[in-house]
Structures are given as structure tokens and as C-alpha cells.
Image 1 (tube, rainbow, N blue to C red):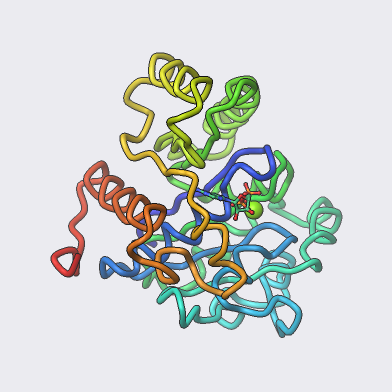
Image 2: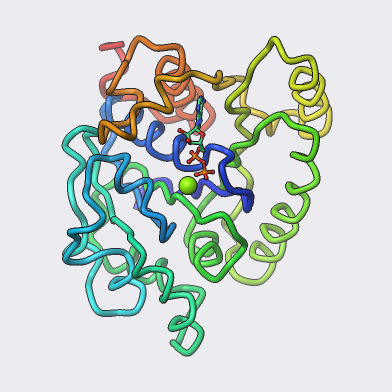
Length: 263
Ligand code: ADP
Ligand code: MG
């Protein structure tokens, strides 16, 4: 099933969805076959991929509770060039229903395993919590990409996430590791952000991606057009940063980009 990564941070508004959608589009532009799994009941990754969450016949919810296979619920993001397992508010109920189901932490993993493995990358956009939904993402992932803002309290929240990842690694998924921390919404003019950025590098070293995603209004505008920023304005600073991030990720993984020379 290729590389399965979840984009996680239990804080809301830290750039998980923006990173998921733009990394999916950037990898797709570089020639990879990508599936984006929206695991947040807010359905922002779904909408940001140009898919209307209000008119879904099936979603990740049906897949998790066993009412649909993964393939039947998967849609195409025409704007993004990748596939989407979409989500909407129905998913909020899954949390309660999953508790009573067998293999409740492995529902997504089992669904992915049962589908034909045609993807180079599966990216999972996690909700802002360390819930059973996030656990489902962590049990089926090879790695976690952690977007973070360089703010004063950023490091504090990271230790909870790191502990959860350790526990999942020990008990549920020996493959799981932190792929890296991605600094997002970065504004180099803010001294505090620079200081926190340096502290993050000291603390996490190699685990910090070299690419930094700047604060860029085009990335924030893109979702209202139903497009990833990488597609909406490919020349914007934000888009270029996410394209560079995809290239850095490939280098780290040692995978080649089928279409990289096009950029
Ligand atoms: P999360 O999924 O972690 O809740 P989002 O990706 O939805 O976070 O981002 C929160 C808000 O910040 C959104 O309005 C988004 O458009 C905006 N945003 C995210 N990344 C950037 C960026 N690099 N520059 C400007 N705005 C951004
Ligand atoms: Mg989100």
C-alpha cells in the first residue's frame, strides 16, 4: 500500500489539513498515485479537495463501521489529481460506535489492507484530538508528519503527541515512527518564531524538515475555491514551499518522482 503517513497534531488550527491537501497535490503533481483520507468530521480536507461534504453517498464513516469497502467510498479530487476518502459530520458518531466494534483501533488499517494496493502514498488528515479516530490513523501508518507553528506553547503539546506515538509503537504498531516536524505558517519577521524554530531544531535535530512553510494568504484562500494551494496558485510562496516539501520527503524516503523534471 505504499507509504502510509498521518498528518497529526492534537491542536486545532496548526495546519494539518493545509499540509495534507497540499502535500497530496504536490506528490500527485510529481507523478505519484495518492490517496488522501479525511479523518476529521469537519471535512475540511474533503472540501479543500473540491468535494462537497454535504452530498456524499458514502464516506470514511461507512468504511470504519463496516458498511462500505474503501474503494466504493473513494472519490476523485479533479482539482488535486488524487483520490479522496471523504468525511463529514457523520464521522463524529463513529467515535462512539467504534468502541463496541471488534478491532476498534484497527478498522482503518483493515479497510486499507482489504483494498487493492494501487497507491504510492496514503496521507491521513487527523482530527484535532488524540481520540479513537487518531488511534485508527496511527495504527495503520508507517509514519507521522507533525505540522507545528513556532509559538510559545508549541513544544508543550508535542510531548503528549510523542507519548501517544510511543505507546502506539509499543502496543499496536511496530512500524510507526515520527517522519518529521514541519514548521508551518512561519513568519521570519517575528523574533519569537525564530527563537522557537531554533529551539525546535536543537531539541529534535534531524527530525525537523529543512523545508519551512511560510505564512501565505494564497494557501488560506485556496480552500474556498475547492483547490489545494499548490493548484490554485502554483507560483505562490506557499505552493512552492509545499512542492519543495514533497521533494524533501521523497529524498528522505529514497523514492524517485516519476514526473519531477516537469518542475
Ligand atoms: P488544522 O487542520 O490543523 O486545524 P488548517 O490547515 O485548517 O489547520 O489551518 C488553520 C487555518 O490556517 C486555516 O484557515 C488555513 O487556511 C490557515 N493556514 C494554514 N496554513 C497556512 C499558511 N501557511 N499560511 C496562511 N494560512 C494558513
Ligand atoms: Mg484540519
